[in-house]
Amino acid sequence: MSVFSTPDASQPARFLVVLDADSTLIQNEAIELLAEEAGSLDHVAAVTERAMRGELDFAASLRERVATLAGLEGLVFDVVRSRITVTPGVQELIAGLHDRGSRVGVVSGGFHELLDPLGAALGLDHLRANRLEVVDGRLTGRVLGPIVDAQAKADALTQWAAENEVPLRQTIAVGDGANDLLMMGVAGLSVAFNAKPAVRERADVTAGRIDLSDVLPLIGLRG
Ligand SMILES: [Mg+2]
Image 1 (cartoon, rainbow, N blue to C red):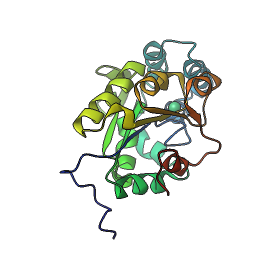
Image 2: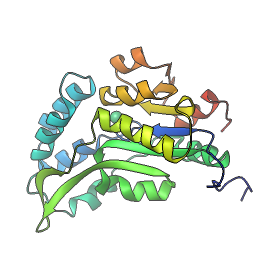
Image 3: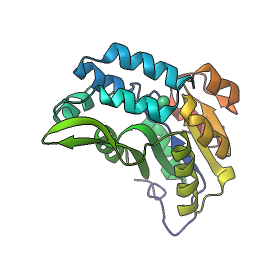
């Protein structure tokens, strides 16, 4: 193990990279994997596409999509987790950041129930997402607490930067959808990754291929 491989909490981090989850950290849309199990995939996929293009209010559209999951057994999370595909380059990106004392967080309009084990396995420093209500072993079709929407994503980036004593100019936001635009506006550098046209137009940089380790050279770090 390199002597630099463990972040030193006594030293201010050099960078904070905040990733979106669905179609960024992972190649799936979590709500669609769940909807497939509920038999509501066609409807949910159409709503998700419009939401990511910025045509719908994210929170309202998420509530509508989650409502179609009512009645699914809680065990569905185990099934769906096994079908998540992690985006190439994630491990290299996280290792490269940690080697230089930097931090990485994920903020998602998806769900803690699916992302928590992945976040632990990857060694994420921060993770914030929505939670699905389960009563008597079944999903109720409701989201618990305030929804992680575009503003909540920007707030998470700002909060994590402060906690890690990273100036906002040394923060990087990486995402693909319209609900990433506010956090991309707050960050020092915004990266459109696998992104919708509206996101590519407003980002500082558009990633040319689907490999998250490409973020390292953008901030002067080699993978
Ligand atoms: Mg996304």
